[in-house]
Amino acid sequence: MAIFNPRKNKSKATAKPFRLNRLPLRRAPAVGESATPPVPHRGIYLLPNAFTTAALFCGFYAIVMAMNGQYTNAAVAIFAAMVLDATDGRVARLTNTQSEFGAQYDSLSDMVSFGAAPALIMYEWALRGMGKLGWLAAFVYCAGAALRLARFNTNIGVVDKRFFQGLPSPAAAALLTGFIWLMDDLRIAGKDFSWLGWCITVYAGLTMVTNVPFYSFKDVNFKKSVPFIAIFLIVLIFVAVSSDPPKVLFGLFVVYGLSGYAVAAWHWRKGRPVSIVQTDPENGDEK
Image 1 (cartoon, rainbow, N blue to C red):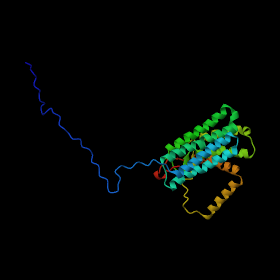
Image 2 (image 1 turned 180 degrees about the vertical axis):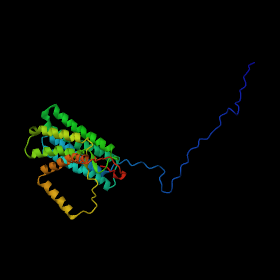
Image 3 (image 1 turned 30 degrees about the vertical axis):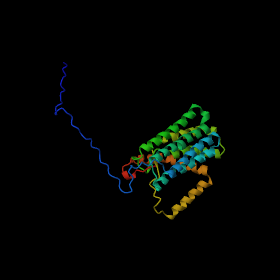
Image 4 (image 1 turned 90 degrees about the vertical axis):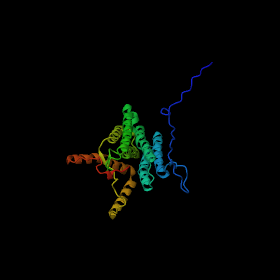
């Protein structure tokens, strides 16, 4: 006769209690409200990015013109990129269309228009015949522009908005292309002033990564009333630039490119070194 072991019943102490998983209660949608959560906006603003794209095109066009030996057109394209670069940020603030995409896109455009393009234009115009020294000087400028833009993006909240930390890349590009524009207007070949072009290139590249303060003109209030003579001075500036753009523009940017060292030397002599580190949180501003 077969013997079967009786099945042992589990005690109540060892039995696992049944628990009901409590799900979070979801609020019922109101009348006219969609039941699905809103999808984040993934578009970009057209108006400020159109100005940035135009500045990028000017930088690319300048490179093409330099490769074809048309250095005046290349220099004019860089100056046009400067105007567009100064416009896109102000348009974004006026229309309240600032975005992180626009800030990053503007930096990439600046690297092409004010970093790679001026270095290549100067190399094609004067530095090609200098061998290794020529392309190394062009690389010093290009690397200085990249470091300058990266530092600007990371220090934007801790630097006094009245000053730039180092020579801004558009002004550095104006030094190089303004010199080329002036020499080409005077019918002077680049090989005749190759060493002067080399010095300007290295100077601009190194000055971009220094801590020398350059006035930014960002504290100028355009909404504030000014004396009538100010309008007349603006008219005189336009007349001077229109009379001889290569000479006037290059002269203005030479003065600006040396102004930072002059201001720093003046304050150092007076025992009051200029500090561009922000001390007032209200002074921070974007480019």
